[in-house]
Image (cartoon, rainbow, N blue to C red; front, side, top):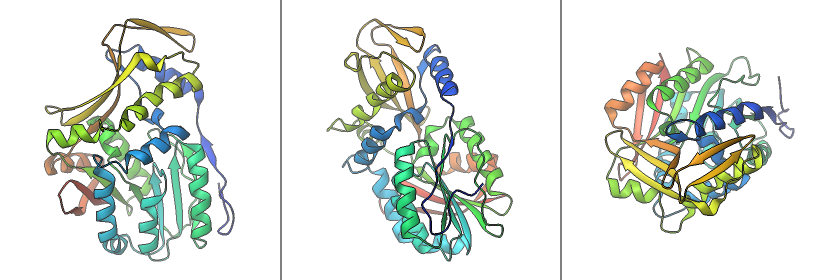
Length: 323
């Protein structure tokens, strides 16, 4: 299915199911411990808050990755080769992809995949205007679930791009499953450009996810607004607070929303009870050393071809080839 001409405005194709989201939310809130999936952060407000987080002094991740991409885009393009069909999982504001599109030799297509329809539509339209020789084919979908990729030019080589530290949001077996799906999408001749946050000092990690300005707290609490709007929940945001900390034994930062009192919240047509101090686990962000990273990508059917880090050795951009 072709969504746009090379000169046209991209047409968004949606792959969403509100009933499945509702069911996933209720399963998570009735679990022990209570959980919610990070994809619920990204409505229009959440997407804007995340862009604000990326500019915070404590949040080193975006600056570190951009430093690598600006310095190494040419090397990445050389490895990828000409006529690439670039598939970006979680395309966001479209900042990083421009560095690759500028460096690549005659890129054939770009498929931004994102759950935030409003941002996806804006970014896809901007990129289609800027890169008129590239077929921009946006897909509004939850990329954590199986989905159908839009039709791509026949002779193009598929290269996936998964920037940020989003791979860290998956628990290890989930990360393997996700990367295995990407491996099937790109095929035996494909590749993946992956952003990976490195393990580092506890103080740095805690500050990155609990900033002094409280933006990350707003971002976390906005998830409850999303539930109120999308699944008919009745959360009172004043009765929850943001908490983030590094779990050293699991090598992950955890984000939680902690109930400040005993309460019962209606979610869709069901009631969910909270004790005072009980939390909803909203996000994990696993931090990798080289051994953990190699084990992950090997299990998923990739091998590390090239690995770059920034000057402070905080972050990796990794070029993976399908095995």
